[in-house]
Amino acid sequence: NSGFAVPLPCTAFLSLMGLPQSELPYFLRLKDGIIRPQQLVEGEPTLEKMQEYRVGTGKEIYDYFEKVIDERKRNPGDDMVSYLLETQIDGEKLSREDILDVSFLLILAGLDTVTATLGCNIAYLAANPGQREKLVADPSLLPSAIEELMRWETPVTAVPRLVKEHVTLHGVDFNPGEMVTVLIGAANLDDAEFENGDTVDLERRRNRHMAFGGGPHRCLGSHLARMELQVAMEAWHERVPVYRVAPGEAPRFTPGIREVMHLPLVWPN
Image (tube, rainbow, N blue to C red):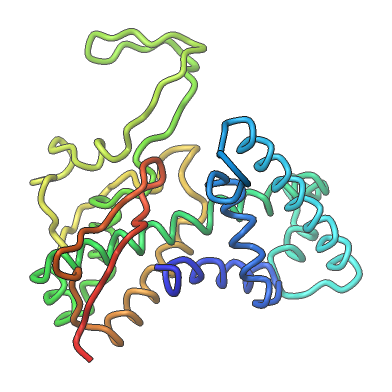
C-alpha cells in the first residue's frame, strides 16, 4: 500500500500542479497532518494536540502555495495554478484566497480517497480469486469493474450534512439547523436502486452509485479519480495477475475514510 496506492495519486497531483516529484514525501506528510494527525503528533494524541497539528499543517499548506502563486505569476506554465490565475467566472478572475482554497482542497480531496479506493479494490480482489481471474482474463471489464468496486468498497462511507429545509423521511422529522449523517455506504447497497445490491457484479451496467456524492456536493475530481484508478489497476494486473491475502492474515481497515491499513499479499515469483 505504501509503495503503490499511497504515492500514486500524490504523484498525479504534483504533475497537475506543476510541482517537482521530489516533493512527494513532503506532501504525503501534509496530507496526513490534516487527515490523520494522530499518527504525527508527539506523545499522546489528544484532541487538543491533533487540532493544533491540523491548524499548523493548514497554515503550512497555505504558506507553501502563497509562494507557488507568486512564482506562477512571474513564470506561468502549463499547470493548474497557472490556469487558476487566468480563469474567470462571470467575467471576474479568481481571488488569491480562492486559489489558495482550491489548492488546499485538492490536497484533501484528491490524494487520500484514491489511495483508499485502490487499496480496498485490491483487498477485495485478493480475497475473491474468481472475480480477480475474471477481470484479468477480460481487461475490457475494467471500467465497469471500477464503478462496481467503488459502489461496494465505498471509501467515504458517511458524510455530515446540515438540514436546510424541513423534511419528513419514513416518519422522522428533520428540522433546519440540525446535523445529520448521510450513510453513503448503505445507500450504495440499496436494492431499490441496485438489483442484487448485496452482490458484486463486475459487469453491472446501470450503476448510479454515490461514492462520488451527488448534486451540488458531487466530487469535481471524479473523472480524474476514475482515470487514476484505471491506469493503476491496469498496471497492477499486468505486473501481478495472480495474488491473494497471505495465509493466516486478514486485511484491516480504518473507519471514516475506509482505507486498508494492513494488507499482506503473496504471489508467485
